[in-house]
Amino acid sequence: MILAIKQITITFLLVAFTSQVFSNNLFKDPPTKKSKPNIIVIMADDLGYADVGFNGCTDIPTPNIDRIAKNGVVCTNGYTTYSVCGPSRAGFITGRYQQRFGFERNPQYRPHDPNMGLPKSEATLAETLKKVNYTSGIIGKWHLGADISNHPLNRGFDFFFGHLGGGHNYFPESLNIQDSYSAENENQSYKTWILKNHTPIQTKKYLTDEFSDEAVSFIENSQKKPFFLYLSYNAPHTPLQASEKYLKRFPNLQGKRKTYAAMVSAVDDGVGMVLDQLEKLNLDENTLVFFLSDNGGPETKNGSNNGPLRGMKSSVYEGGFRVPYAVQWKGNIQPGIYHEPVSSLDIYATIAALSKAPIKKKKPLDGTNLIPFLNATQKGKPHENIYLRKFDGKFHTIRNNNLKLVINGKTSKKELYNLKDDIGETKNIANKHPKDVERLSQLSQEWDSHLIDPIFLGLIHTKEWQKKLQRKNKKN
Ligand code: CA
Image 1 (cartoon, protein in one colour):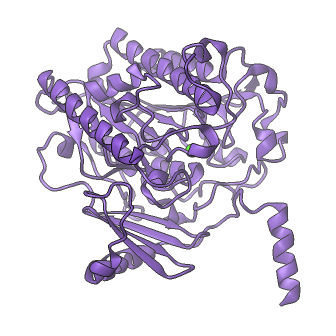
Image 2 (image 1 turned 135 degrees about the vertical axis):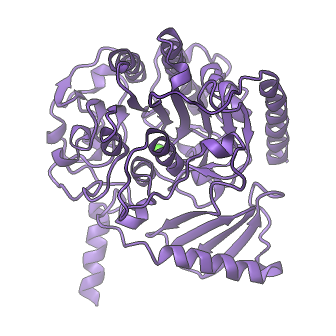
């Protein structure tokens, strides 16, 4: 019942929103400008599907994130390539399904292991855009390898202000390890000083505010050439920590949800600062801005809300990897709502196409330039299928049109859902549609045949896990 109400609320808000945005007819013909567009990707961390205004959130106002939606397009079926942080970010930053190159686990924090992170055989978006004279900056969370060989400045970026691991403490007084490379594990990595390029610095403000300030400066400093800014907030990922400035905005919320709301609100302020800066510098018509989360909300951990979607972070159900997703490019894309599935992979493909950046033939992109689809100048849809594999859990899932197949490799159970009538994946219709189950299984297998096994151990492979494995091997 609650799910149904949530669903109705979201549908209603989307309809209301559509009529509102279509009334502001900002659409013009596609750009004829000679200059290459800038791109800003604002990625939130562990933000729930229903925790932005444009997806129906009411208890956490996100007026600035909603500006992107109003200026541009809300993608209601926006997917990432994985349901936890590291692999999802590896997919986004390479434009390729990360299972193709073995990045299928959250990496351990290993600052002296060059193989624990993004393989050097893949080209990051920053590396590709460098070939067409872009300046690239990443502000916030990296999480693609803590060894110096994978430092952002060694992976195509010209500027870095952030942390190497998968999460971080937010208050300056809780950052007490100066040298990021002396932290010995993920826990310790949360306490390292922030790196400005290669230099550890002591921050003064709440971390989200530090990142927002740096983003504004980066835009100011980079405007003479085309730029790519990856504003990679670690919020609202745990630890749940928020400053009074944001907490006091939510007197009626309690517990985790209150702190979470404050953290989201801080991100929203930052998004507003970025958009204001683009307007002030008259860059907004030459800058694409994507907003998305890296995976679904871990509702029980951080108080997020995935609305009508089943499951949460790390799941193969929609709540795991269908995320808030909006894109603006003022004057160049038609404002509205887009319902066909899109992927975080499409960001790379879109800017590569617009900037005419060369792509290696041996490393074809898995995404699609979204602009012609969003502007309805191209028929069809960006993706025939959306895929996910979770190697350790032995799960596969594939979405084809509105049908979604979930295969549990441990039990061999196959579930089929029709997302059009059943967004919450509540009615398994596999028995009624055996031919579709077979067809989707084959498509999934075909995709899987191009993947490799994970190339490094992950955060789940703790000392406990190693001991268990040793005991098991002794028995055999
Ligand atoms: Ca995440």
